[in-house]
Length: 313
Image (cartoon, rainbow, N blue to C red; front, side, top):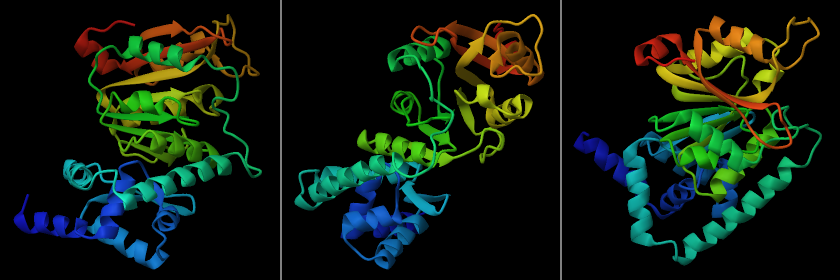
């Protein structure tokens, strides 16, 4: 790293307000308004500090609807600086403790906002769902000990799977179309201090991510509600890396002898055919226990990757 760039980044962090901002963002992403409320400073002043941190590549920013969110940058040096500051100052500092208390109050307000207003919840997770422990066990069995760097959970809902995924990957992106679900997911990840998690607004049929961005894509109770199964699977394959894996968590009806035009949701033989048409090979499947006896977990990989590794569906 060039010396002048290192100095620039250290200078950007050398301010009390910016130290407070960096340590708050180690807990997760937040808007300017939320950070302004916690710091009890004016919006222009907080925005200026965030701009300086962004110019030094210490924080990232992105849009979600009408809001701009900030988060600690993924780059290792950003986390190194934040960790060093935390070690030097300590969480028992009176100012930082006050910030932490204000953050908890903000998370409480987020959860309240998620359950207020006319907006309906997304279709994902609307009915009986296996227990979290069963979901995690199914994922553990399907994924085994594969190396995971970047994960996308499409239909993350309130973020139930994000903490489990966060402990096993470098970076986790939760995506949902419902604003209130995203609010809940952000509150969950911040309460747990999961700075490697981010939550985005994303539609399964037009994912706002570059080609080959993820090692693992989870379609979390969204494929069965898809209005265009081929497009949905094509998008999932597009953002997968060549040797990556796709996991479908959804209700899957038993194979039908003849599929009717009125058929809704996923049917086992239709799903198998759709996966093959999308260039995917099934590598594992299982039925989860619980109130939804038709709840399945299905893993697939791009056919080229399956041929290279000798994996059979």
